[in-house]
Image 1 (cartoon, rainbow, N blue to C red):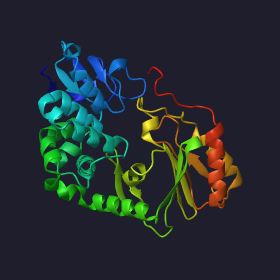
Image 2: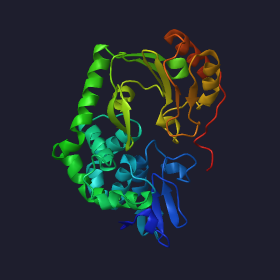
Image 3: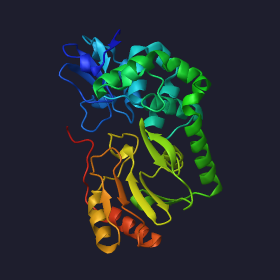
Length: 330
């Protein structure tokens, strides 16, 4: 099998395989864990990178396909595209590529170095950090996405084999991750689990300031690095409690077609936001169930006690109707 990478904005008329995204008009094969994706059921797995490795065992699937493409740039998409473009090098680094993809998508990792590579890939898509030419970044997203892939794919082996060479792009965020992991291990940050509703409540010292972090390739501010939290609990509903601030997030694993474990369906968090707003001195809001990682949060410090908030969240999660099915056809 010989294929080349073609950015999606230039893919028209070229028979292609899409990795980690949604098919386009000329897609012959889709290898994606996205909800409702037409990925062959026999190939499905938690991550698109894993799906790409499975597909290589069936070379006939690629008959007539000329190109690999994707509609967004992230860690899982990069690992999956590289796997199809360079199968030999990919199989030599299979565990590392999957770990990079997992760190990017799920915020979990086996190797700290591969978590760092995931940070590097995020930094490439960060205007304040990226070494890419400004002309490649200050363009409409489809062109930016293509430029990111074309710059990154030839350099991915070096990133995986020699992450220390890319230290300038991961050092600050890795320090945040390390401090967060140490705080969880020492009990300064406490995680209490409620397995019946797949909930983890993370208690963060009130005085901790937020620091820069990434989820996928999206920059955000967090007092505790999200990778540290997700790597320390298997629960897919995560509440953060810091002083009078409380938030609840449904992890990305519950958005995709996850195959390794049963996942409790996502509820509509806006129902809980409305209930809390009626009883609180501040307003609550929530993202839609189909958001990548829907979050419930208040506009300010809540007047409700932490114990009351946790109790109400647990009751809601135990009784709320399902509002999201990633396996439903798109």
